[in-house]
Length: 306
Image (cartoon, rainbow, N blue to C red; front, side, top):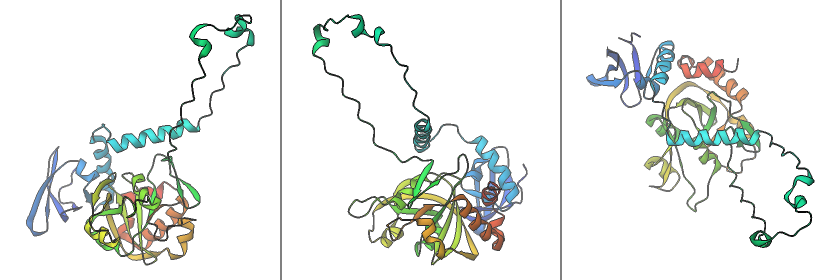
């Protein structure tokens, strides 16, 4: 695939142009004459995006095919959770009835058991493991919103004043817990994000950016965001994203109750969107923001609902 001369955007180096290419590498020149070489095609599945949406979609397929097959630790956990969800959904097998005449007691013809077996009590049942929220179904407020199987999901992030700094850095972040150790479901939801998911970012009642999740979360501190929460230096979950800012924001202020449901957290952060609502919001945003409409990850999510 010939990429020479194509415009690109890198998460760290900004806008640039492809100036060199071979079977294993691409070279790009960025502002200020900075030239960098990257692994091809995997860089386009993680850190760099082509301006040409059709080329980006094609090279992403190559990047997925070239990616190592070994799953990360978090991907393995997610696989096990989803396998558990599928197993739990299957009907339990019914044990065949055992005729009374064939039981050991019946064969003993009324004789009492002897030896160690006579004084043994029934073995206590094994304690059930702690219930785990299924990855395939997430409770948003009082409504169970089902994550689409086998494809990207869409989320709405209520970021407020943090949107600007996190969009510039290309990430999402929220604390692991409150100052007194309490878990917040809408913060925990960062752990559900998968690469390829789409996040709509709200500030002052408007969706002002749309991003694509690039990797699973990891734990780190964030000085700017931690100060916002009044806890400088606290640890939180960090998710790398690539943001597209909207020149024409989309209003969502009237949809908060529909998105959040009965969530009691006033400053709730991240919520899984119903597929129909996500399609509606993305379609409106893409229609009034041509740059967003050219993004391959947005077009794929929109086409999945047709």
